Image: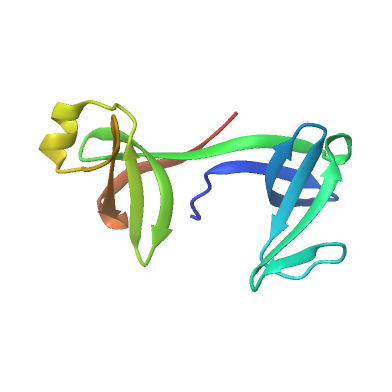
Length: 122
């Protein structure tokens, strides 16, 4: 399962990472696609009217780790970057989470220790 966190848009029968901006949506892909402009070695963008997009959703990947709820922010080599969605300092201290920002605690969790990985779509 790939970890998705952010906006995604369906356009012309395909799904793209997206960034809405008023009446426009920036669509992103990792490979060259007709009509997309290269912005970095593995990133291409095309701006389209919101009215041309078939569907626009915000996707969050959630999980349970050590009995607590987390949001999955990313994945690397069998590890998941997780953020505690409870925001409680006592829980963060017990789990030895890193303080990322005020009230925001994160950690790297082995993919094998994480349970109930699921996507939530808004």
